[in-house]
Image 1: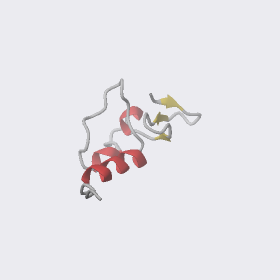
Image 2 (image 1 turned 90 degrees about the vertical axis):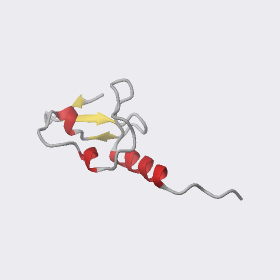
Image 3 (image 1 turned 45 degrees about the vertical axis):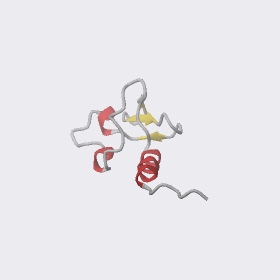
Image 4 (image 1 turned 120 degrees about the horizontal axis):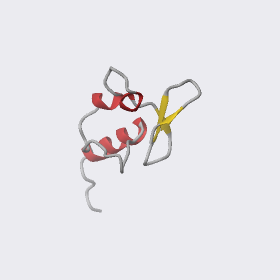
Length: 72
């Protein structure tokens, strides 16, 4: 899902919302990707599923760690 930009870097497309974001793994960077600093909430995405942008992944993690809503 990464694509090359005019500046030579790769931009990934979030498979959840369609936003463009930078992924160190897609860029082949030596440093770890930004996602490695977040709590492990989901399995590492496969090529078929792709990656989520920072906003989607953070929202998913927050929703998973929030206490369940009490029934009304």
